[in-house]
Length: 206
Image (cartoon, rainbow, N blue to C red; front, side, top):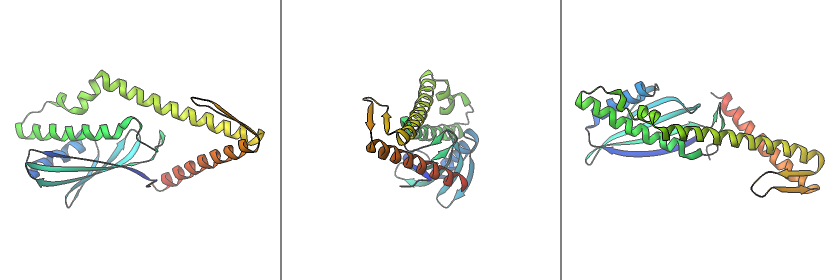
């Protein structure tokens, strides 16, 4: 398991020549997302931030039957200002990658037709959709809920280690007494310390 980055992969075939598509993809990642772009032998790499986490996108672009294939590999740094990401809550980054691929489609359409309608940019459309705003609000609510749950569990573990009475909050709340309460509390605190150490070590390498 890669403790520094979480990896995501998606690919799509576009009905367009490779060179115009490459330019359109570069423009979208640089202008619409504001990410820093650097060319590679088979495409380019883009670096920026997504949901307060530093991210690196590797785009591999090559000719394919019926058009041009774009394979997007996204590496998202687990440690960020919103906390440490163990998993993709709500499939957020997979949804973002689909939006980016839609944005590349929009960008190549703009270039081939000469249109300049920014309102049709998938990122703009997503921001204006009530469903997107609700999803983002729910995502923030889930993150905050998880953070509060871990905080309550940490405090319970400290109390359990000191007193021998551990209360674990959940669907069926559990109360453990005696030596087992101290053992479980110690394991919880060790796991929390491990996550904190991983976050610190990843952040210190930036």
